[in-house]
Image (cartoon, rainbow, N blue to C red; front, side, top):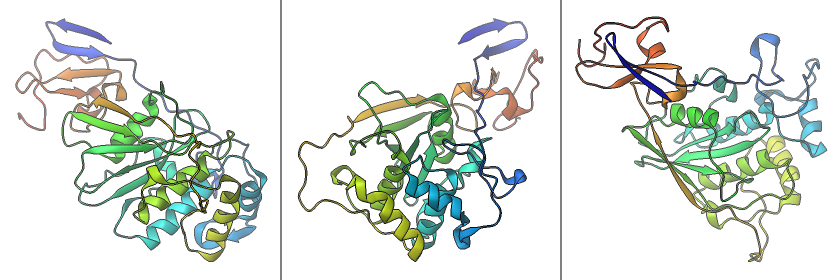
Length: 294
């Protein structure tokens, strides 16, 4: 980060972030969805389960052992939202493209599955009722993992911080075998939370997860994923970790949300240029924020 102080007032610059638009598998060209893996799905209206917008190609993908796409994640979101209307979140993953997620209130439990960065990876996130901390459940985590900027921006948008620090707690959850089942685990974590189960004490039978999700879609009812009768003490779990992210502006997003920020001459709060309708070439001699000091 470069900080400069000039006679035109205090302005600082950052690298900013550019969201990578991934290959789409939506219902139309105008309704493109982010997809993890694969290439554009150019099928017709060969519906498998039309009520949750799943086509036959999605059923084939689920059973093929490949990464789950947005259609399957959003179908799970839709069913969970229908079964647990008191829980916030479950927003369409296409909203990640331009950070169009609606902030959730902390008056109740919130759950959101997110596409983590530019890799083909899904994680489950949540925030408990009346809590200020966001929890991440990641089936491909490691002790030195650091949440990507793109993921941080999504989390900050969904779980708008009430203070200047957003705390993120990475939970100790079961780790997957292989690289293609992160979407299944993300859904399984979300289901455990909905049914008020202890996700850090849950163990899933990984080989049964695809068949179980298929059955859930077929019946239209999400239920907890199969777990072994006896706990496996040797099961690999992620390491608990806490991250604290500084957020700014009225948008409560990290500094990197924009390439330039400006400080109010009166309240000394930092704001992203785009949030106060300033152009990158502008350097006001004096400036007061339109939110608190006008």
